[in-house]
Image 1 (cartoon, rainbow, N blue to C red):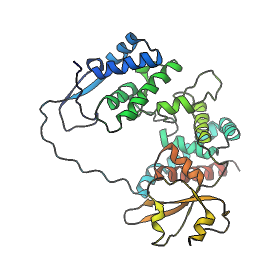
Image 2 (image 1 turned 135 degrees about the horizontal axis):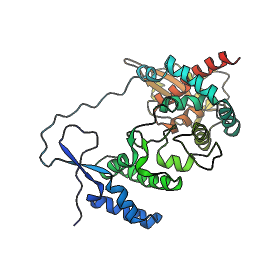
Image 3 (image 1 turned 30 degrees about the horizontal axis):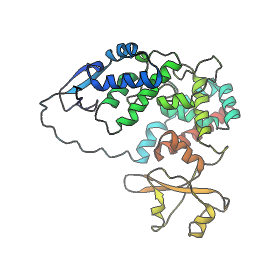
Image 4 (image 1 turned 90 degrees about the vertical axis):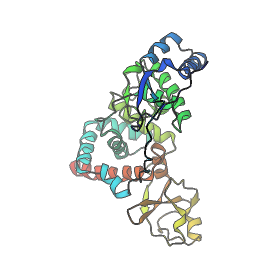
Amino acid sequence: MPILIVFLFLFSSTVLAEALPATNFQVTHNFINKMAKDHHFNKDELHLIFSKVNLIVADKNPKPSKKRKKSKPLSWDKYRALFITDKRINNGVQFWEDNLSTLKRAEKKYNIPQEIIVAILGIETNYGNNKGTHPTLETLARLSFGKHRRKKFYQKELEEFLLMSRENALPPLAIKGSYAGALGYAQFISSSYRYYAVDFDSDQKVDLFNSAADAIGSIANYFDKHQWHDFGPYTRPINLSSAQNNHAKSSTNKPKKNALYWRNKGFQIDSDINNKTKLAFIRLPQDHHFETWLTFWNFYVLTRYNHDNRYAMTAVQLSEKIKQKFTQNHP
């Protein structure tokens, strides 16, 4: 009879729990069988690997716990302040100088601005200095086999992780990443690692853990594959009337209507913007008000890396500050 797995989300601290090897649970054996059938993995090898991974099983008689209040998302100014600091700007300039020829080559091949690549690496891992310390296989197994609302997504990522490990001759148990399974300099999830990572230093392997060059090329390739418009603009601040504000979204907003459409709707679009240029509008939350911004296609592409307008705007503004200081040092 299959063993039912009942355990809490891995970060819960409100319930006493015990950790047991993943191979104690039927769901793990079902997954191993799927990997053997679909991708010709050796069952015995996977069984050995998963026997070294622990899942958390909830106490059968948990103490009543108070409901936690849902945390309020950080306002835009507080979010921005986490990443746009003098230290991160200076480190970005240093990273740019240390990897100048590689960044130039990536820009030439993919038409992605060097400063955007540097800014993404600055936000994700502080230029490779914080790649994550969580064992990725265990992280993905717990997220996949528990009650997480996105467990189907994580089950797919666990599958991609094992394929990625095999393709790159990486030992699955040795790999560490973020608390959600993101990997290496660029913090790619496993599926992105497989589909977008590239060997940019020509050493016959794709290594986002140790190769800054591979990370640079992979980020550029990622944006290129998401249809980056060569050196296009990102954003402009815009004032909207109360009637127009409902067109500015807090969620990501894909540009679908062109400037002429918005002008005909009464929006005050800057005269230098071509009528055919597609635009969208977003709003960024402050404590007591919203900032409203006009956004272009490349801003939307930035949100494909992280589906948060605050993230994309931080990437834009950090890149501008890094470029400004880099240009001062290299007139």
